[in-house]
Length: 281
Image 1 (spheres, one colour):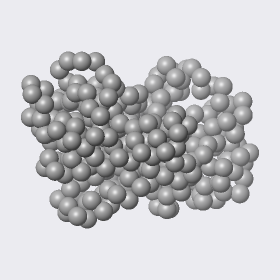
Image 2 (cartoon, rainbow, N blue to C red; image 1 turned 180 degrees about the vertical axis):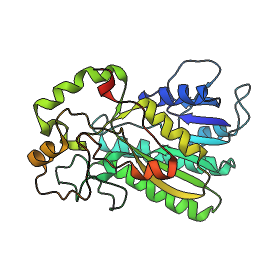
Image 3 (cartoon, rainbow, N blue to C red; image 1 turned 120 degrees about the vertical axis):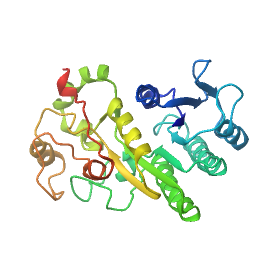
């Protein structure tokens, strides 16, 4: 397959581009920044004409795509004004989805976010482990956009019954060099309660993208994508008793098992995280 990866110059994007290429796929990075040369096309995704043109073909770079992985965005709250975050992220995603459909692409995977689960959990989660079953609870403009993108995808696949859109609710993306900081998280359980002490190794994030591209289905689906464990050396029972004592625990969880349930991704995508911070610290 030839894959367009938007935002392939970002933290997760760089790893996704590398891992997809190592898996034997031809990958073109569509981004506003990046290294010039084969495999990179500079595109303003808030411009629909540029977006459609880039997906249809660019001179000697490519003549079309089999699938799109949409990662490009202002990647978190507080990096730009709320209206800038909303305008950029919502418009870019609409343009990518719409242009992909116009270009005949029926395989779309994109980055949603763990934030739709209710992060930063100033209001406690309804239960743990959290999963995809309860309604979205956006608590920021960034998260609101992610929720609206999912709603948009639901309608687009209804309009286009042969279309597949997979939303990956990525946890906090980490590189191996980030893991040196993790032991300090034990000092105060509240410092990482905002996402239930979750994270995702970028390499496992790329694995989830590949599994989603390979998924033979149509319609829309969403998956939480996290590491198999928490960022903390402290046991889950201790963390929850200290920070969320009244939140129901719906099933038995291991001492350090993720509280961002990846059961659905394991079951449907055959997602199996391989990397843990505990292996290198």
